[in-house]
Image 1 (cartoon, one colour):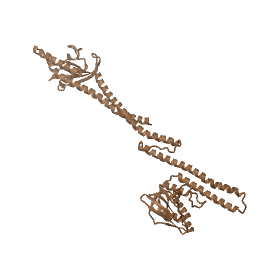
Image 2 (cartoon, rainbow, N blue to C red):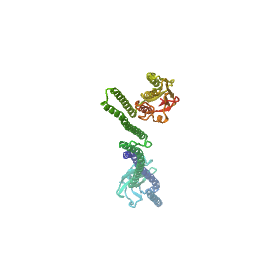
Image 3 (tube, rainbow, N blue to C red):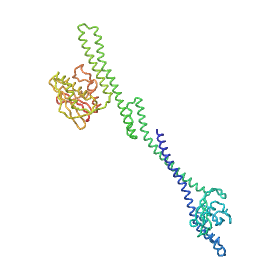
Image 4 (cartoon, one colour):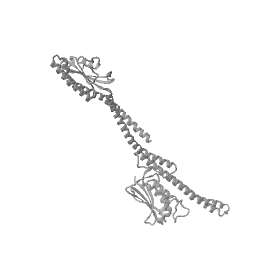
Amino acid sequence: MTRRLLGSYLTITAFVLLILEIPLGITFQRSEKAQVVASLERSARVLGSFSEDALDARTHQTTAAKKKAALEALGRLTSQVQKVSTSLDVGVLVVDPRAQFVIASHPQAVEGKDYSKQAEIAKTLDLAHPGHRKNPVSTDVQRYSNDLKQEILYVVVPVVSGSQLLGAVRLGYAVDRLHNRIRSNWLSLGLLAFVVLGAVGIVGSVLARSVTRPVRSLEDAVTALAGGDLTARAPTRAGPPEVRTLAAEFNDMARRLGELIRAQRTFVADASHELRTPLTALRLRLENLEFASPEELPGDIEVLSNEISRLARLVEGLLALARADGQRPEREIIDVDEEVRQRAAAWEAFADEQAVRIETGPPSGARATAVKGALAQVLDNYLANALEVSPPDATIKMRVERGAEQITVHVVDHGPGLPDVERDRAFDRFWRASNSTPGRGSGLGLAIVRQLAEASGGNARLDAADTGGVDATVTLPVA
């Protein structure tokens, strides 16, 4: 994945560099040639201004004085031609109006040589007719030179004085030098592209690793979890937000899976332990029926019926607890006062049989979030336990306390109460109080209460009540 990300970064960067640097290189190439032509043209016009006296004297040398002046002007021109040729590293040629050699920077040129057949000179002299003399036209031509055996860029400027064409100045620039400059520009652009790609490669590698490292860690955690390591977790503080969110979801899934597997193992162990006793008792009772007298049969059958009822309650409790362990249902908003009123009304008839009253406090207007049916099942367990331990003429009080973030429901009885140690263990599976009636209950009711309360985002506990009994509470988050 790191290589794919890095390849993507480099591909995008290379594409951007191509669409930017190719037009830029072409622009540099054209600009270089235009600059060379412009520089040669400026130098040729400067030489043209120096050439006017020499060419004019050469044309009108009738007296000795004029011949002397022509020689002096020619000497000055020769000096200037050598200076320009040396400074610009160009070939210089000056011709008269008939394209005859006047002076040149290269030794191959000879006096009287005719240059009229060379296209750039012929074109320049042809264009320097009276209609163009106020604005002499320069010419640039690139061609192969038979004398120099290489490609040359020529720039020719006519020399005009007033209305008279005196000749032309030609500067020749080796195209190889121009190509070298253009090639240097392309190499500079290529080097820039290489540096940019290198920088993108380094930065992209760091970025790609910062993305793929947490992904690899997540992959390792998934592999470990699949191999049976329920403690495997992925780091949630590294990588982009999407990866951190995915890691958090995976950790939550791994935690829930671990809880489910631990609950399953606990359920199997508890069920095996708790079912063994009633099943053994049933087997022994059934075996003893073979030797029982007719008078003993009704009593034995009643005992068997009680054991079967106890076994049925135990199985139902185990199944309910297994469902509470395995579920993670959606929560809903409930009216706490209404739930308390309905459960008090449902248990009122049973409470009347035992001469026990159930009182509910004033409405609190509390609304909480909880798993559907959870609060009703919790209150049913609390009321069943309270009615079991309450003496006649006692009162079970139910009240709702509304806090800023939590809603607490109290179920207070007037029973004998529980010691601190037993209250702490009351929510353990299959635990029974020391003063409980033997054979009654499965020891799973409060374990189910705790599971439902925690699934609803709250908790359940038992406290000592002022009445001497137990204050059973369940806390739920405010809606």
